[in-house]
Length: 139
Image (cartoon, rainbow, N blue to C red; front, side, top):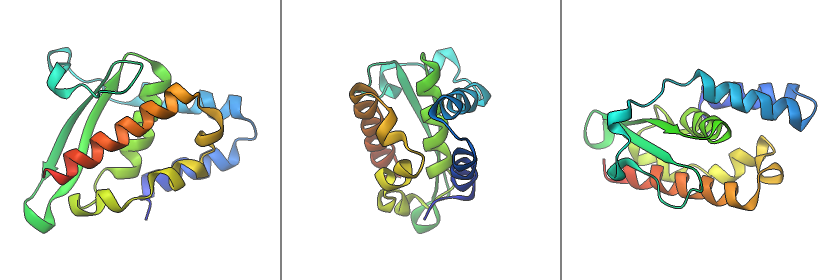
């Protein structure tokens, strides 16, 4: 159920032989993201449960069953920005009603993230996924 953008990331991760290369690629994905305007980095957009500062700005287009989910995210940590980029690729453009059906843990496992993130970062990823699901459910 992964998006084409996520499949491209998965293919790149498959191509990269070691975790150091994957880690660098993750950081590059984060650097390539458009930063969130500083004025939008408010408590209302902050994701709780992350060790780093993380903000999500939801963008829903359409209404009802045709509503499509998207978000812009940002963090003060490069690796977390990369994780946000991966989550954006996983969820962006999906019908809002389908967001909660994505098995994010299984998809992220394909990238090897389950084995290479600290417990604290893994908790942060779970918090970000929870926020994405709640934002989409509210659409």
